[in-house]
Image (tube, rainbow, N blue to C red; front, side):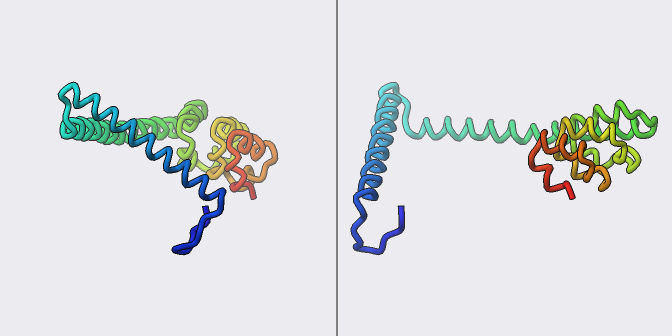
Length: 159
């Protein structure tokens, strides 16, 4: 709906939208009032409802805060395994780790990021990993197509 100047009369279409919006608002208010009334009929006050809501929100926040360290711990474990795989020159294990977390490709030695077979397998799983591939392979038709098929946003890494 186009903003109107004060006192300007809305078009019939806009008036219809306003009426629908009012009806929806009235319906939501009626539903809310019915729910509150039913809860109060069971002896639950608005304060009780707010207390319960706040408690639930606090629990959700705690769960979210707990997820962060778990994710970081898992990332550290993967980076540690990746370091070991690089030391042992274990291409298969490197692929497994990079297959889980695409941006870890950035930490793979340039020789491996230039290995077409390795890179092709990675971008088939994570097209966005094309960002960390050697420039030569970023322009390779097979690699670029595999990456874009997996993730159309990978197109921005094709030069």
